[in-house]
Image 1: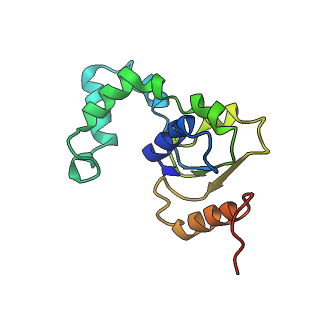
Image 2: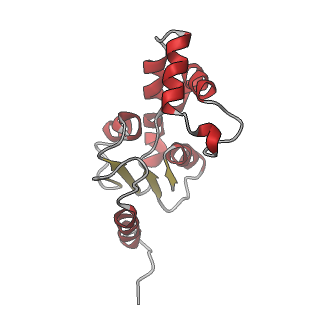
Length: 159
């Protein structure tokens, strides 16, 4: 299970864990969508965009990296981290994909949903009316995940 960058990491980790019971991706971030937006910008425009988007990384969210450094990594490597490329390993086990209605397209798993469209037996997607952090719907997020987990084959039965 992972949220945002953690969702991308969980999706990629599924490739190395075919025995996993299931996977939950919460607003998984797809840096490939940003690579195509950032690449054509001039260095000054890219720095401004990066500072606007990731202005809080140097204040405790991430340590040892700046917004412009994140943008440079995305421009150089974003397509290699395409979320939709994880569809193959994800389709072999149950998958819950939760997105937020008020989130950016880069965290709505648009490409992954399209790649998994024919796998409705193992794939459940839901969208909550919230923002990327689910700040105003944390309990609804928790309930969604716990109810889905309870329906998995082999899930423990509540007393």
